[in-house]
Length: 164
Image (cartoon, rainbow, N blue to C red; front, side, top):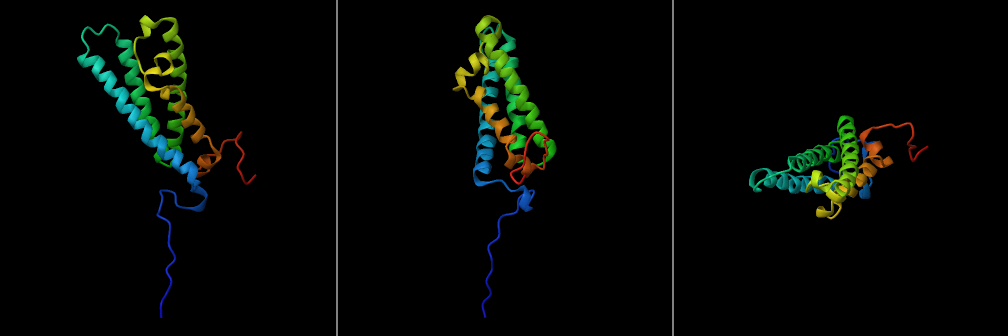
């Protein structure tokens, strides 16, 4: 007498059916969750180099902006992995702040380059392949997608569910 054992899916933090992400949405979140710490490491390294090893540092604003970017990248990462409402709100807020600074600093770096200096957001992230420009926009798009909202238990009045 043999019994059949049905395969089960691995347990997730929120394992009920309504909190599951589609394969594509899940993969996009993992990619964002891995690329953001990598960008944080890169910008943190730049800020540390500018502060500790660069001879005659004349512009602490660039170092401060790169350090701010590093903190934004690390905080935003939380919402890509932690499926809780507070983490989602934190990431949305941080990505909105980061997007604003990217556009502000990127614009000012063309107008007053001597003041802005060489920072991660200079010329909209040209030194980083424009990742600082498009990555927060992609992150916001992911966080505001209906699949992600449903998985995180977020209800926004202006976003319709697929079932509506």
